[in-house]
Length: 309
Image 1 (tube, rainbow, N blue to C red):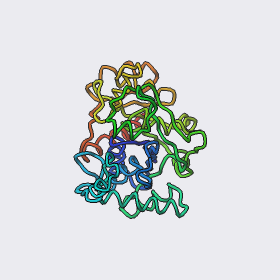
Image 2: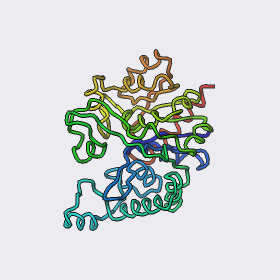
Image 3: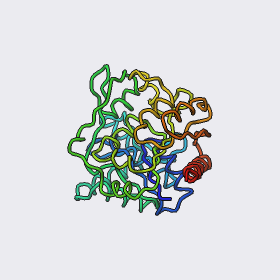
Image 4: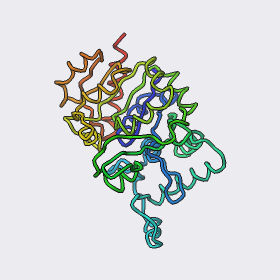
């Protein structure tokens, strides 16, 4: 079964890692949100791409889920001495990724080509593609005005009330050719337990993405368990946007193109409501903090979809 995972953030990286453990590399592609990308002291930083890449390479920081295990902060400390902004924390080894990516971009390489080169260097065998080679930047409309995503997420620690989202550059952006090809060839598309607004939303907003999903078998894993997000501000955003923070709310967002929805056991009572929407429901353990749990969930999803006939 050829599987494509739509991913963003730590939850997306962990789900991708689960499928990487149970599928051959040629049967897996990961399409990653780039709406979080931004310029940091002149360097192109792609947080979601890096989190997926580091996780699949086995070097991600296990405590945070992002960054590199055992990284040091000498460059950041020196930057602070010079008076530079240090609210976005970049480790020394992580810094090398941003330096080299920016160098390659200035040589004229597309982001997809750069990502493939970085993944090869780290021994990542499944295909990892940015959603687009064109810059798309998530903007968060808040009570403090419109904020770039990293300003909202890191600098303001998700504190301001959210009213909505916009994507700068979307009108000029297209799905990256490799990402489009992966979706065209997919037998199963899995929407990882990522934030539906700021991790999956930018991917779905790209021209043609929804049409491709409507022609595929699509399963989503809920990022909300018992009304809370395991990581990140998804539940807070849902509440501030007037939605009930729940797995059912996530299923409703994806319902127009969704074939199956995976809920945690804590939300098992919601399964009949999901099925009433014409969507199959799987109730299981969806907490995937460690590699064995990730592989188990990926395998369970593959078996479940294979049983549909």
